[in-house]
Length: 354
Image (cartoon, rainbow, N blue to C red; front, top):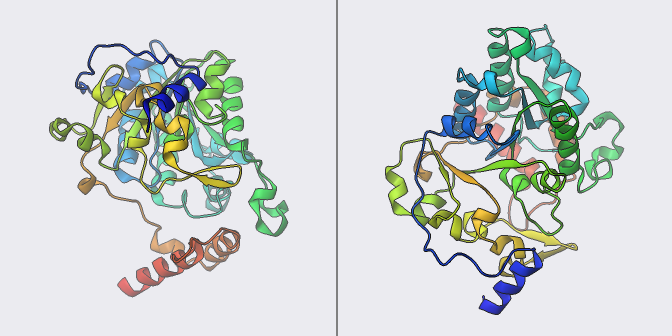
């Protein structure tokens, strides 16, 4: 990319073209739980990137909320993995009320996402973990889970096409409003657990969750969770860091590189209905330190594992019929199996392995 073009991109996003002449330094790791809890000293909101399905990231989140200081500092946990239509259900469940399984499953199975992303065990386990922690706490200290996905009713969606029920920006504007109304207005503190792309400070329209909150004057401490091995490629010494580790990135080698460096090579950006080349997208070329405050290192790529659908779901005819119907409207990548075929193939492999 030509230097003049880079300067133009930075100016267009409201950043000064001139940067500090000091060379970036190596990032310094610290204990990640202490680092996140300390961030609440200066921020009401800490946003933690959630690589969907990653088991190491899920284990870290559980360790974080189990920490003795967590419930002393944090009041709420805002999650992407639950339909806000069922906020009362999750409120009752996490305070210890008896909720039948069929009703509870609607929380994560009936979100705006037609596919299986929230159906893997780690998301249900997280809700159950909050419930178990709350039962050990006095009522004023109990954690509240706020469901950030827009409240939709699948029974009223025409032909199962969720795009007719959810506007493109609903999935960012709704959780931002929940945070303003339920956390900030009540003088509370919240951990926000969302996919990292929702937590960028800048994109085309500056309408990510974090951008909307900071536009309203709410400071957010943001953490990018790396599970793709990008950190070790950027700075080889990271391979020797404790696992997990948190590192602030302002003024560091990790912060100086373009945000695009952290994104999977398969990530595409669509503007006005067209796929746009990465080097023509301003927010992808901004330094990482202008998008996030810190990075969470969980270990090398070779140690990462993904949560899988349980065999019980593959054997549940009602569940399979529901998912197949909802995923039927999803586009199929050229030359690749669509979501329906992937689910069929996975469940067939589960059946063969028994």
